[in-house]
Length: 340
Image 1 (tube, rainbow, N blue to C red):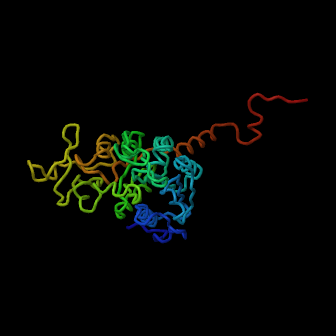
Image 2 (image 1 turned 30 degrees about the vertical axis):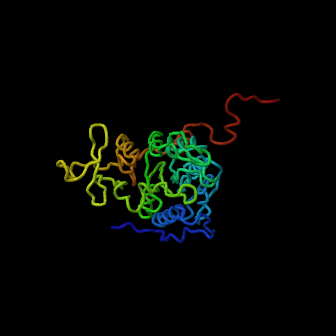
Image 3 (image 1 turned 90 degrees about the vertical axis):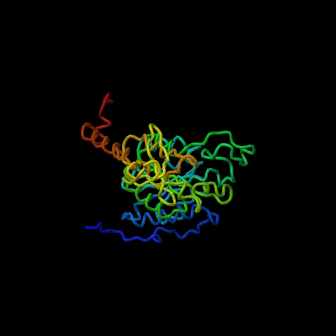
């Protein structure tokens, strides 16, 4: 029997009455639409959602959602979202952040939320630039990028979001492109259903300060040959003609063509997002064009104990064992004396 939805929402039910003030053509508009579509399909009451943000263009997100929300300060969205979830585990908590907000000043909060496996959903808009503050390079900007703060090209090596997440013991990592609303919607649904920290990296376009930064792989004319959409339990196939795939060649991934050198679909790797050992998932998350296609979809999705559940269990366990049942018990415990 099909699941019966208790709450019959539409995306419009999650749109606030606020004017959306992102630049025309900004990738944030598509992200907003995809999230609203995903929430309408989750069968969760609207009052159970909370959207938390830090600072940046992406962080205007809570204003445009007809849910509970909190606009925090620079880099602190993950910390605030963690507190919200621990205080009220029944909430579906969403941390909306950017590559600068999450990975620079917010880096510590980001990795420790992931390490603790707090049941929050982190949506990281990655446009490889500081957009709100007018075009400085960010922790994900490619080495050599010329910006206002790197006029001769940045000499720093960029973070790989997937590498960082898996290295911090992340159990859910996915990647999507802002313009692919259908794929994004499905990923947000899977992220919301995952029990633990989910991180979704969105390859997002800033039309003002870094326009077209992802076009090399996500452009309409090239995306089929330069990206691969991974699906759990299915062979790793890509290409306009669906004639390319991935195999494991020794300790490395290798791109092959189906039909050449005896390669058939049976030779290809089958994606296992639920494999606890992150080895292959780590390689998939780090694939870069032109040697490899860029991996999209849910790359890692592994269940495990969550921080807020462990905290609640610990509190209940201590309550059962402690002789302190009220304030009088606490005040009269330990070293006490009577004043005559």
